[in-house]
Amino acid sequence: MIPIFFPMLLSESTGTELLIWMVSEINNVRNQKQWSRMRKITLNPKTIENYTEQHKKILNAIKARAPETAALLMKEHLENVRSSLTASTLF
Image 1 (cartoon, helix red, strand yellow):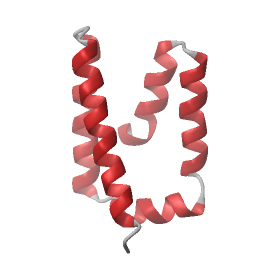
Image 2 (cartoon, rainbow, N blue to C red; image 1 turned 30 degrees about the vertical axis):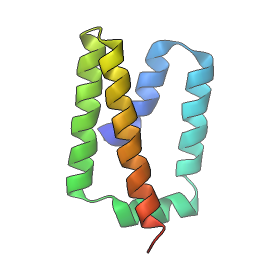
Image 3 (cartoon, rainbow, N blue to C red; image 1 turned 135 degrees about the horizontal axis):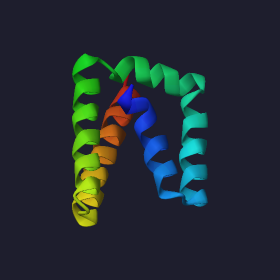
Image 4 (cartoon, one colour; image 1 turned 90 degrees about the horizontal axis):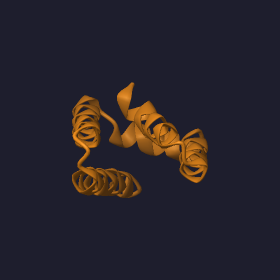
């Protein structure tokens, strides 16, 4: 369940209301039909494993107090997710 809850837990840990609200709004979009369709197309055990590994690396960078590394890893992760979801629109 890390891929689903990680962004919300991460945003809540910051205590930044704007970030918490933004992630909450993204989660609201995830409940829509089109998102569910894309998720069914793109999510498989290998993708989930990949996302989980990315989340672990981000968390480890945060724990190591390496914000630049965490930001870079998050950027890479979001690009991977975007690329995966964009590819799903081709089906």
